[in-house]
Image (cartoon, rainbow, N blue to C red; front, side):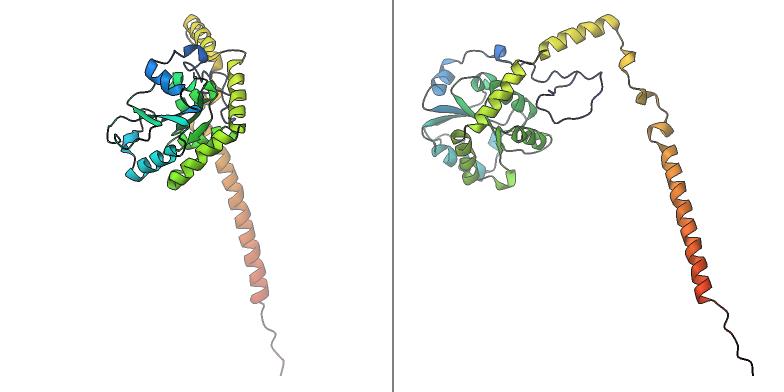
Length: 277
């Protein structure tokens, strides 16, 4: 089973034995009511913007110039509230009134709140799926690994603004947030995709349960194993085909060499005619 979903993943060839269960655990039914402190923030002002870089990327390890850029950019949207996952307390005293930091966020619950307008993320796959399932536009700052691909998935479907990490600044972040808030195409695109995921004929949870029961009953599914797994080394790497092609190429090169050599010798090495006295 693969944590993937064919409705938004890049098209790719897969085998019949691969079952896509992407989006499992982030459906609307999994959302819980916000606790009072988060609820109050979410319902203040024109809207809520969530910023989280997941559990692997520590926001507090950002360069100081990034932290300053983020605070300055957010301060330029006084009518919107920003909640940021940030563990350390070194920003205390510097936070604008509309910026709130927490060491932990109920991310999925916040994204599913009707007043949430955007999600600023590093582009992790779980964050991508949560944004899609909740119908919230993305602003991505990909840092490494699959985050670049995930960011391209989001922009391909028209619900994300991607900021290159080498170009990150107050100016680029402000422009990205402004674009998402003022251009409703991002919201429309992600809400349409979210609805498609919700109305998918067979849900990820149903696939997981039924395929688990199926495998438990039949133990092995040899009929789904591709023939390629039973090939020997020569067949698997097409060594016989490569050898045949190389042989043909070598023969052609040899024939061309001999032909050119024959022509050169005939033209350049003709015996000179001697004059009779």
